[in-house]
Amino acid sequence: MRKFDLNNSIDCAYLAGLFDGEGCITISWLPKRRKRHIDIKATIANTDEELIISLMSLGGSRFENFSVKARLTCYTWRLIGAACYPFIKSILPYSIVKREPLEIGLRMSERFCVNPCKGGGYGLGDSEFNLRFSIYKEFRAFRERQENDKIVVTYGSVIVPSQADVKQPLNESLLLAPQKK
Image 1 (tube, rainbow, N blue to C red):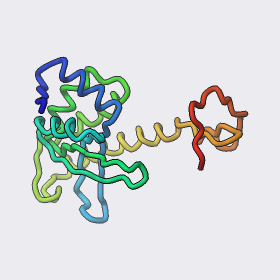
Image 2 (image 1 turned 90 degrees about the horizontal axis):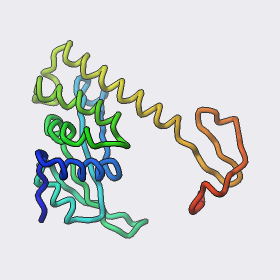
Image 3 (image 1 turned 180 degrees about the horizontal axis):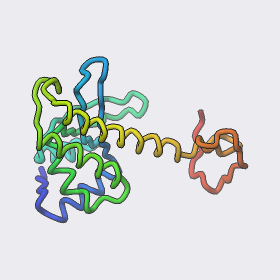
């Protein structure tokens, strides 16, 4: 089993590429369950169990899900809260695709290091909660921009969600393998 080192620039560059392709930053707020709890998670999912086990050298947790549709087992590695900070800080200089969510995630995970809170966020003061909530709103705005920039491909037309009423002829050279809906 390989062990990754966040002080090794080659490992950090590899991890950044892996995260750009297979990773995800999630910043969540559950207002109905815990009004003052905002959380951050860094996740990498892959079908290679050995890779996910190797990521465990950085800490975090691992679980597996079986995909009936793909007939594969998908393994997931996850860091939560303050544990995200050293990982994000180390891979950020090498990230290309997910640079913006990583920058927002770095600021949020830093809040967990500066002001740790136990008990589901109930111990957060107003100023700390408001700061975390502003970072959460920035992350949501990024995700909304990202969703609006996606192009939805259907048979016969290309629909841009931000201009859903504008249809253009389908340029079939852009599609490698059309998918059925």
